[in-house]
Amino acid sequence: MPHGSLVTFEGGEAAGKSTQVRLLADRIKAAGHLVTVIREPGGTPLGEKLRELIKHAPESKGMEPMTELFLLCASRAELVAKVVRPAIDQGTVVIMDRFFDSTLAYQGGGRGLDTGMLRQLIDWSVGSTRPQLTVWLRVSPEEARRRMESRNGGQTVPADHFEAESAGFFSRVDAVYAGLAATESERFIELDGSSPMEDVASRIWAVVSARLRL
Ligand code: TMP
Image 1 (cartoon, rainbow, N blue to C red):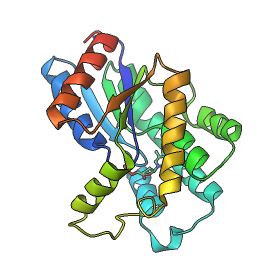
Image 2 (cartoon, rainbow, N blue to C red; image 1 turned 90 degrees about the vertical axis):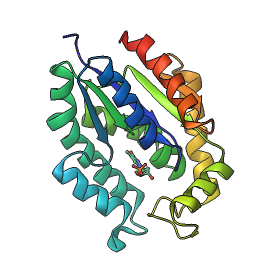
Image 3 (cartoon, rainbow, N blue to C red; image 1 turned 120 degrees about the vertical axis):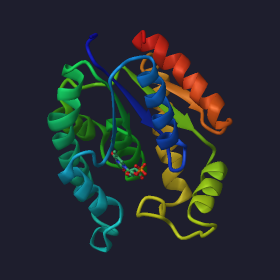
Image 4 (cartoon, protein in one colour; image 1 turned 90 degrees about the horizontal axis):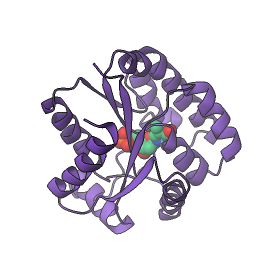
């Protein structure tokens, strides 16, 4: 069994990550490899409680950016130590629906927290557990808005605290992702998420299978 690996997915709201994560996991499994799929925040019993707090709890609406950051880091520290690291060590391909790049994009770009401080906290939360490959699914703000509305039954009511953020917030999120695609181009791959689902899945498989030699 080869040494395990880590692939992460990133993007704004309604970029189609969860669907593509599932399709990729199916392909990797069909190629005969062990796969674990994890979402962040979440992925452990404690992390799922923190996810609920971070995204939905009325008490956390409008919480301080630093409070949000620490809750995210708490979920992440638990997840990396209890699930991600052991799975990689057992030779599993771990696919994560978001990881620390989301913190750089949302808490750094969106909330305006200092990137140097975020990188330090990320280091403490994940140690040496870094993705070999990150797929950034990019969709236009208009397409994201359209998908969110159709996902929410045609309602404009946001599904969680993040969906309620402004267009400016999401353009700052995207700008951070674009910066990562430029500065870490070996790892951080941009793909057009607005193409038909099967086309996106094939492109992802081409990139991932080549990089991980699956
Ligand atoms: P999602 O799993 O539906 O994408 O929801 C997770 C939300 O949490 C999403 O709006 C992005 C946000 N988030 C952050 O703000 N920072 C982070 O580090 C992570 C992992 C997620």
